Image 1 (cartoon, rainbow, N blue to C red):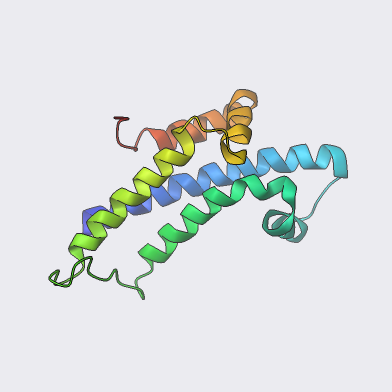
Image 2: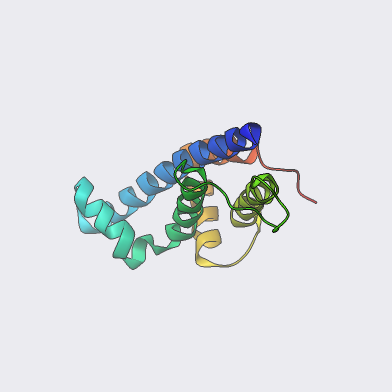
Length: 141
C-alpha cells in the first residue's frame, strides 16, 4: 500500500508541475490580450473564465488524487470482502494513471487535447513537464 501511495504522490507532484507550467503558458497568452493579472485574479480566471476552461480536466485529476491521498480519508474497500482497502487502493492508483494517460496521450479532439497539443508545440517548458509525467505512465497498449 505504501508503494502505491508513493507512486500516486509522484504522479501528483508531476501533474501539479505540469499544471503550473500550462497555467503560466495560458496566463501569458491571456495577458497579451487583456493585460497583466494578479495572483488572485488568475485564480478567479482559472475557476470561471472560458479562456482557462480547458485546464479543468487536469485540475480535476489532481484534485481527485489529492483526495485519495488525504490521510483523513482512507480508501474504502473495493469489495465487501477486502479487509483494509488494499484492493481498492490498487485499482484507484491504476485508474489515476490510466485517466492521466487518456487525458495527456489520447490524441482526442476535445478542448483540452487541442489546446494541450498547441502548448506542446509552442513551449519547451510544457514539453519538459509533459515528458516528466509521461515517463512514469504505463506503456501504451
